[in-house]
Image (tube, rainbow, N blue to C red; front, side, top):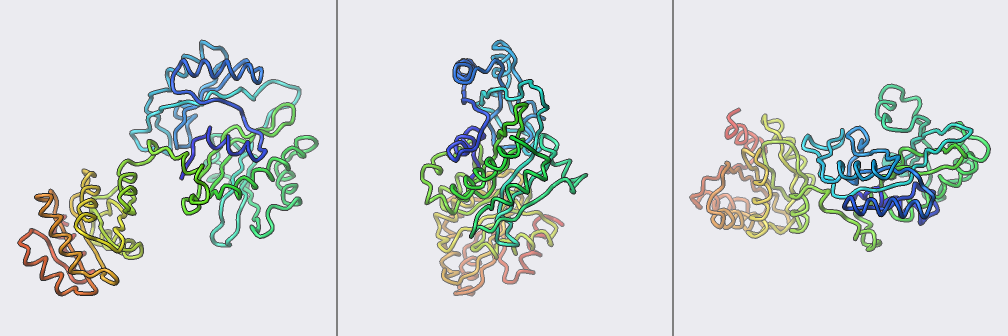
Length: 397
């Protein structure tokens, strides 16, 4: 589960991470009040207006604007609120901005230069340990840095059994070229950041940039936090932070119906029971010349109601030209699934695209007979190869 920047920063602050302070606003009037409140709290004389969407690269898309005056702040807030923000991490349609974060300007002048770094904390699955990834080249072009100059990207593996050690924190600060007060402040910053990552059961922290100010303070200017969905039962307060407006509407609907669904860019809808079989089914579709339009695991209780709901979700995608149902009857009986398919088909009246059904396992023979005797225009398959041939046939490949 992804969080907005303002939510992420609030969590980090609770663990002692110094953040760029700000207040969220839904209207231009609220943005003006937020700026005035910041001025009263921090003495800020300039502000930054940031679009709050679940996507990186907001600055490149025009979603982050510096505001040296109150008039400019109101202008920027008015332009960003309601815009369709397109970034390298969104679709071509972009995301609608419903709220902004009005944050203090932390790039104030001083005797020494400011410096931006990149820091992230994530799980290294290969080693079964946490990892801190960092670079001296923070900012909007970190992807370019990783691609062109990968030697500037460092990492530090942390054993979760012992946590981040002092020598590791100092090593990271040293590799970033810090010294004096900035060195000391950064070691505190990275320890607090790691503790926050572990404390909220996150799957990813990305702080870009981490700023060394002109007076040698270390500040999280931006924050991206992804939570581990499997741990949300331990964090009811964090689960309440979910913003479904930022998620694909069909995925939200599928989740509410108890279906495991991920939308993809393809032309063949999939309905399968079991994640492994779903992956194999998508491979079959690719081999047949098509492209999977989704990942959909209906689970072990594929009754008529669930199948009908799955049909409706798949068919919301106008790119779908065929649907392949691939069910293995282990716990669930194939004839029961077949009856569910027939009932769902009749309840819907018809399907606008061809339907290929492969049922294997318990009572597979009876299931095929049910499908064949239904009189419905359903293509029945027994083997994976036959299912692939049917997909190829209906697509005209």
